[in-house]
Image (cartoon, rainbow, N blue to C red; front, side, top):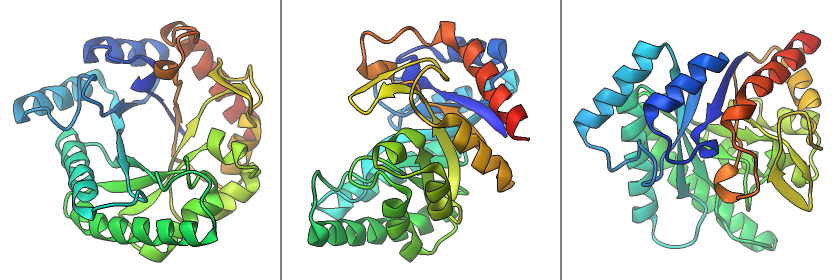
Length: 269
């Protein structure tokens, strides 16, 4: 498996510094958070996109994906959501990134009828986005998050879409918080799995990010099931420092984090 980290852990950091961190600590790739406060986002002009792609290529670091904030299950007009997804897909194509991350965003505490409606809205939008993404060589991934945090919930959306350019990003924290064990998450997501976001937290009542291996998340079990099933994709460390002022700075943790993941991979081989 290849290892990456998300720029969510180093918000606003210039690309040259992001690449220095990746090469210094032995990461194969980087997930780029696509927000206007970041160096790379959908508002970037063509020249800046070309420059960013060239910088990654020169450093020998892959751009794993573009982490957007489109909410495909949210109620309301389809046009604005699809325009947001298309802009993210175009950005990924220009950067040479294979994946775009989107959120469900269907709402909190939905009843069965509300969930069914959110599923249908998301599937319809992703079906439209899939054709656009296919023409650009990009795959749109629905993250296990918010209204669809488990593998079972995410698969209810992407299964009916039935298109190879739509899949799922497995965030191991959200499936765990949703009460789903890694074996069950993988079983639900394996036909659609794009890549896996790893992280660590103290527990369900405290999601402040911790160094990998110092919290409660079942990272060893997740890696073990991926290895056992022969999955050979990406593990991306999403350290959510942007939302937690008390979190230790990510740069000082990257080396130990890579070593922890390497140990888990060796132990599960």
